[in-house]
Length: 248
Image (cartoon, rainbow, N blue to C red; front, side):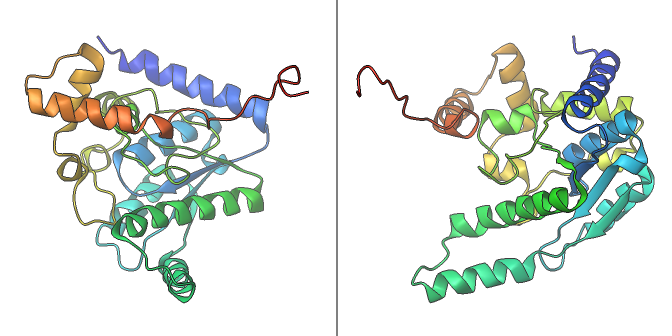
């Protein structure tokens, strides 16, 4: 049985220890989407470090229909924040690729904004001396529902070993309003929800991760296939090991 109270307290202490060892005066840089992951991650950082050491960055791509939820979150937490619209950056990227003879594919169009957002977060970290929060969860990571070197990057990761179900429980333990915890998860780019993109629900995925049970054989096979094909996103970069004995 998942103990939300103990887990929440343990994560808060873990964040404090991380910053004690990796930047005693640094702030946490958190990309704010208004969804459960960024909301819970930001709230955990506030509890661990205080409002003055958490900086939120809202990064819409053009018009974002649910941007008001992100604004409401930073108001609720009382943290400093800024809004950086990445559409001009993306448009410039696409134009430059075109000028170089490469047209942006659908996959590149989905992944590149996530990588631009991570570039913005690390630029903010360089400006402020901060540390970038990775806000991904275990459920997404298990099936590779993240962008390599995009939302899959970060300096510290408070939620990456918790399923979606567990992240929501932590959010409720922190007292976050339901609007942040139960907001339909979506990537903000494809126009589809996460579960539409995946083809199965997080409840089904979380049960399979924690209990090894999936009643639908077709869904189980898809989850296994996604997990296996996306292991490269969660492991270390494969590297050649130089051996001076074998290569004198």
